[in-house]
Each structure stands twice: as C-alpha cells, then as structure tokens.
Length: 139
Image 1 (cartoon, rainbow, N blue to C red):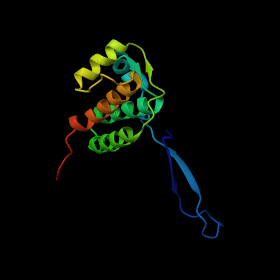
Image 2 (image 1 turned 180 degrees about the horizontal axis):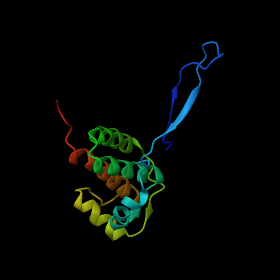
Image 3 (image 1 turned 135 degrees about the vertical axis):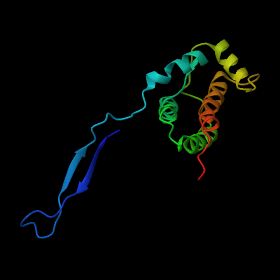
Image 4 (image 1 turned 180 degrees about the vertical axis):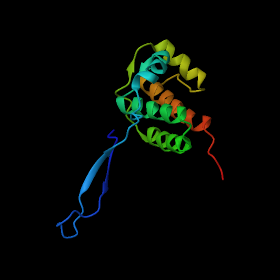
C-alpha cells in the first residue's frame, strides 16, 4: 500500500496555467494489514488459506481493531466473494483433526467433504464473523 498522496499546487510562475503535482507523504505509518497478526488463527484452524484470503482476514482484523465502521460491509462483500469461488486449491492443510474441530465449532458439516472444501467453508465463516462482530453505526 502506498501512503503517498498527490495534490495539485497553484500554477508556477511562467507555466501558463499548468499546475504541477507535488507528492505528500503521511507522517503516521501505513496501516497495512500484517499477516503475522492473524497467522495464529490459521495455525489453530489446522490450515493455511491462499494468500488473498489471508490478506482479507488481516485487513478485516486491522479495520476491526481500528473500530472502522466499514468493516461489516467489507466483510459482507468478501464473504459473498469467497462463497462464490469454487476452487478449494491453494489451501494447505496442516492438521485435518484441527480443521474438522474448527468446522464443528462454526457449525459446518464436514462429513463427505474434502479437506479443501472444509477449509474454504471455515475461511468464509471467519471472514463473515467480522461482519457479525461489527454492528454498523446508524445515524
């Protein structure tokens, strides 16, 4: 994520009305999601999801920690997106027993499903959990 922003400055002398752009860097550090913050969740779940799912959960975690009201909406969008994916490749199963235990904790049926299908369902549940935790602010 690039924390630099640009803005137009007034025309410079002799520039005949053209404006130039100047880059401004924000002083506070970027709030890029840190995959290490949420890595333990995946280890306890018994699997590692594809990088895009790891990043989605890390982002949702960061937004939730900052009490960002958009977390619920983003969680809903990501949950719908994750549910429509049919590819369960890319999930690295570390511990099938833990995976099944996590599925049981989320109320996910795992009998007759591949470990990849179960891992994808658990990932969708984890992403969706951020929407359940963050009630939208109403004005």
